[in-house]
Image 1 (cartoon, rainbow, N blue to C red):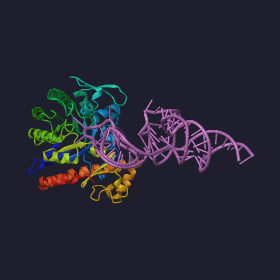
Image 2 (cartoon, helix red, strand yellow; image 1 turned 120 degrees about the horizontal axis):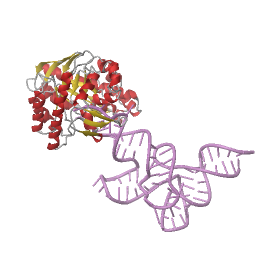
Image 3 (cartoon, chains in turn cyan, red; image 1 turned 90 degrees about the horizontal axis):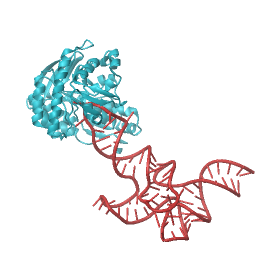
Image 4 (cartoon, rainbow, N blue to C red; image 1 turned 90 degrees about the vertical axis):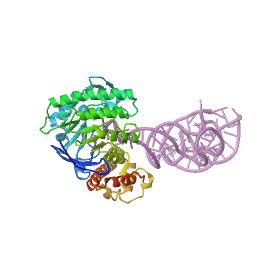
Length: 376
RNA sequence: GGGCAGUUACCAGAGUGGCCAAAUGGGGCUGACUGUAACUCAGCUGUCUUUCGACUUCGGUGGUUCGAAUCCAUCACUGCCCA
């Protein structure tokens, strides 16, 4: 993997760059659609490429390990082959599942023991076997096993959780460096900053992560219940420490506004389930604000979904029709909403990149945030 | 013409003397959703009131009773069966 930092906004920490992988180049800042189980829910690969213009998507170690399992994954020749996607893939390590399925797990020095949400069977993730699994998946960018510290953790818990994440990281890196990619394309390994909302911990974690000298770095444990302002404060702090010449990935974030604020603070990569999940639940993000498509007010609004929309579905279908599809529980509603929202997210980061390059990001951002935050 | 069953909120449908403004589903309205156990979840859905609460309801009318959606009479309507 290679990162070229192309432009830095004169008035903020926003940057534009290029990440090059064996599966192609990614223009940053970028939003990465989440395809947990090897599918961006309700969206075809063709739509991902043509309508949404996704440059990289996510997969998830935890989910793919449980199903279809690594035997099938290896026989398939890796995730790219398996799902018919020839662009880059990033895989999360399962650290977030350790957090979100917390009532079914046990953290230990060795790793995390958890029960499958599918059949209840017991499994162990270690920093090493998670690297192994991601070797088998064949993701271009793999993530270290971490504990995603809850946003309301106290300092003591956050500190020991962070220290465990750091010890796991050392083991993960060692294993990564001792093993090889399986399918002929190269892989890289990102460590993850933790530390909850505590400045001293975030600083310490960012320094430790930076010292590992990997090709890119991630910030985790944010947007997990802490106040939004705290999140911005932590991003700002961590990015003063993480190296400028390497991509920075803010994990799991967020709303369109969160993303612009993140870009301003020097983040290059984002992923979030929000455009797809909220889309499936009837919420549309547009340049002019947020719409709940189940609301009655759209029932006889025959104007197109979004006249300024970034994808064909925005012009092809009316608000009234999309509302009808949601109320009638039709699958097409989920497809249209997912395509629209993802296309909007990708449009937003592309637009941000343009303004970084043209040098007026700082004046463009606040007006954009104001516009997209309205409720329609 | 005779017999039987039924009529409950937007719909379906429980409730068969007080704990009933009335279960449950559906439908409707409004929210929530941030490294996806999520086409999910929550609230509201007779009227008035911010709440407490008050008021009007269970086909119509008239009774019985301290008290009726629930019991009785009668009328209307619906379904099924027999002529």
